Image (cartoon, rainbow, N blue to C red; front, top):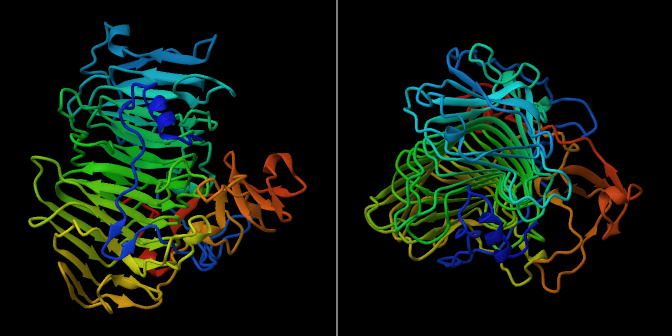
Length: 580
């Protein structure tokens, strides 16, 4: 895993899908109106899935019933294919597909009318597919697997600069969806179709497995494109982010990242973020208008599960599960990279709703309002989201934004906010609030009908759930017990607390003097994408090399649908049986 900023800069410039000037986001100025945002909390023994079976047991769900039946989405989403092109399979010598200019490679293809671009089934060490065509929204180009599963997996010890690069074009769809009526995917690799989340691992039509290749590789890097769609893909063991999307500025102008859809993705067990979208560099940055992020499982990430920047009008993030973020917080590559998620907004109407944010070390959401020159006012809603189980704040609200913009937090729930961050950062102190904001945020903020439990205040200066302090107005918020949201089947041992699962490390390099980490009997860790449980207390014993000390468990099932029959399922929060 990358441990330095310079290392990441080197990595990003190795692939055309990333900008060489875009390092990880720097830590914010954490001095807000409620002290420092690096204070922390523990989940207090709360369970992410109290009713699930042990990892080596059978299926089940959190409320004690059977696995729910799920309707199957009908076939025919893209219509029958007409003109098609099948690309060559992996190179017989090196396993690569290297086509950085697909239109030049195939000059006789009518790229304005091609319906399907097929990638043959096989094991690829690298895919580079560039200069994709510009298409109208009424006739997108669908790119999919053919004849079985496409697996992108480098060889162990490879020194290649990237794994999978997609570049250029607009209105194309990359999908591993099984749909015989549309001529996409394959019957043996349906992913989570018909609610088969618990058996979807390694069963998507397109799988990117980065094997935690050193130097911070992305599972898939996409650059120079807009108005595209990703769906029914599995990405795992990325050396850095699972999916990386950006467009670099040129001549002081940043091209837009508009009209992009990211949905039905299963991204898990990455060294850093699951999705890293946009740029954290200074202005100008690409504006992400009409970005849609929904129905995704972003699970067990070294740093943030989701990191999206520069959201613009029409952006919407909904019905996602962002679970077990920042599990590498003791040894993460840089301080302040240990939140569950991070988002930056710039202008227009933007909505975050019905999402589940579970597990973090820093804030559950690191949130910034950062308009650039020429941007309009912001109108941002956070409604019906569930936030739980971190070692620090609920929300950090930073940036600089004033009159003309407004922010609404309505019907959200917060629990598991008990201080515990000091085990790695001993000088940190309890923030005493659910949301802490920077003094440079002076826009009207409304809190309405939210719930939170614990002794913290909702925001600094406000006692109880109703009142006004500065530009903050609160009405109908309730401090009291919040029921835990449970999943159908995480596959973790029954009773596992969210923060009990971490990424194995020999030393807590973020703590003073980088002390060795001692794991207690029963501790759960991820190592190389595998789940282990400590048979006995141990220090500096790598799990796969010490079977007497570490028990290898079955992989987590990750059926992270909200358990039926529960309050949260009734309210439509999280991943549901049928896509909204």
